Length: 448
Ligand code: NDP
Image (cartoon, rainbow, N blue to C red; front, side, top):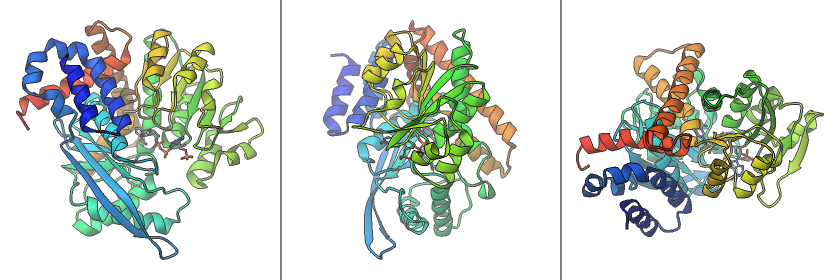
């Protein structure tokens, strides 16, 4: 049996009931096969893959807090410190009822390669809780965040592990967590990113993942003889990534015709009104029904049986920006049938493996999330630099660095794919480019 297959079997055996983690490992190892086989003897002797798929440390903890009725609630807290070969652990905190250890491990594993691709000195980690901020009062969210950090603060720090936002963790949650960290440690340091602008946050961090997604998509299209201007774009999600992806797509001359949330989706043939969407989602924290009610041209569709209607709409470019496995084989077939020629992932692993293969086989340009959504973590690393320097850069400065990083990421993965005989396979290119740097650092640092 090949080394890659042996390690994959080991992951499944040692990590039962963690399908998302298995899926992420399989996708990465499959596309690394050529590289691993070229160095198999050394990697096997060093157990490099076994170490790569095993987190350096996994923290699981109790998060008790008191709700507005005086009732004590208990949630599960997680932080997986996956790999620090090239820098301090870095990755977001997801707050969503679906969160479990397998999901955090899939996200942490992906984060290793994503962070490596940015070219910045950051290792991979991820965390979160099954707490749902939706429908909670500000006081309840604060009580949860304070309790979460009361435990987690022992294990994080500006030079060890720097968490950030993710699904359910936005500026409000980061603010409460930062305040509690400061109170407990007495340190005013860059321990969290995604902070508010008045206390160490970076301009353009809010926009970074969505904008970065579009900078990379624009470059991918350009290198394939196409232009984003004038194209029709379907986006899923209506959170941080989706909103700023829609904004930048429109700034680049494209028309965004869909957004979605966990209960429904909107088709707006005249183009999504981003300011209205921001008002509904960022200010009122309301459902998309409010968007549709305020906009004549918009059609609202209730989501039935977990289906994702946005992918049935005719588009040139699809940008999944909600959550994992939201674009399956049926969706991929609908996209291809409707003439979609490019898919770039704003979310983490939103496309199933079967869907990815189908898109690639049908000539659709496909860029995986670990490259396409790396603008968020890259700008988080820029926030860390500004915190260390005790300086704040202008929006334009950060935005232009972000654009440079995204263009560079695309060329790195494009070159890696070509070098290993898989031109145009950006999944393989991203995994190979991300892996080689981490593998070299791990080898240089000995058996740790
Ligand atoms: P938000 O919480 O701001 O938004 C998430 C969006 O996805 C919401 O519209 C939400 O709908 C929808 N959604 C979440 N879970 C589900 C689900 N199970 N089924 C259907 N819809 C769902 O998160 P972000 O925009 O920050 O994150 C979106 C994706 O991008 C995630 O995969 C995240 O890991 C990834 N990402 C985010 C980065 C960032 O900087 N924020 C960086 C890199 C990747 P509803 O409001 O109804 O819950």
